[in-house]
Each structure stands twice: as C-alpha cells, then as structure tokens.
Amino acid sequence: MPITLTINGHERRLSVEPWVTLLDLLREREDLTGSKKGCDHGQCGACTVLVDGRRMNSCLKLAVSLDGASITTIEGLAEGDRLDPLQQAFMDHDAFQCGYCTPGQICSAKGLLNEGRARTRDEVREMMSGNLCRCGAYTNIVDAVMQVLESRGQIKEAAE
Image (cartoon, rainbow, N blue to C red):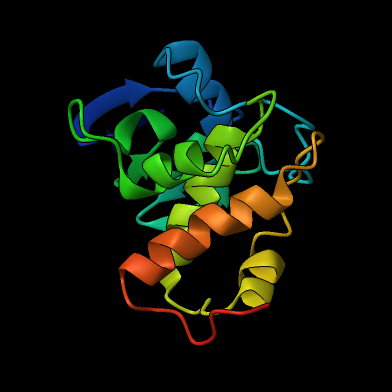
C-alpha cells in the first residue's frame, strides 16, 4: 500500500504491507534504529516516537494507518550538532545507564512536554509511567524532565 510519511522532517513516499508496524518500518526500512523493540506489546515504551507531536508506542501502530503523519524519532530531535534541550538534560543528569530505554524515554518526555500538563515531579513520574527502565534510572529521568520544565518556567512546585 502506498503511504506518505514525513519522518524527521523529510517526506517519504513508501510502499508497505498492511501488517507492517511503524516500529518495523522505521528500524528495518528506514534504518532508524534508535527506537527499540523491547516487548513488542506496547508495555515497555522502548519504541516510543512522536506522531504529529504526540507520543506513541510505534510497535502498536500499523504504518498504513499513519498516511500523511509526521513522525519524529530520537534521531530527529537534535538540530544538526545542537542537541534538543531534553537530550542535553538527560546527559546532564545521567538519566540513563544501559541506554536501551533512553530513546523511548526521551521521546516520551518530549511528548509529555508538548502536552503541557505535567508541572510537578509526581505528575512527571505518573505521566512517564508507561516507559520502563530496567536499570532504575527513574529519579535521574525525572530530574532531567524537571530541568527542562524549569527552563521553560512551567514548574508548579519545585519540591517533591
């Protein structure tokens, strides 16, 4: 089936089988391997990407259902050599250990920031709860997201 997707700012005209997930399309056909296949059931969040600015588990979405959508993966967040502020905050706070979940965590956090609803540490924790980290870097991940919220002046309360 023919579809058109804008992937990381580049329009792509593709022909895909109806059963191909967005994750498999990105990893196997577009060579964008930042998004990880963790559970392949939408339970871990390692495959999270942004679809029209909203976070989505790419393992659960069929590519053909997204015809005309704009997809942003971890590879598309930086602008040239300049990291997205969220990527920099993850580095500043060592918000990763093994790094397997990091692309999904960052894309989910970017979507969370786009939603504009999280203002406290507890809200960030709750709204990021669909992204699992086997290493347990949750505190540092929340610290990184809070840094970006603070830089935007979007924090309701600074303390836990």
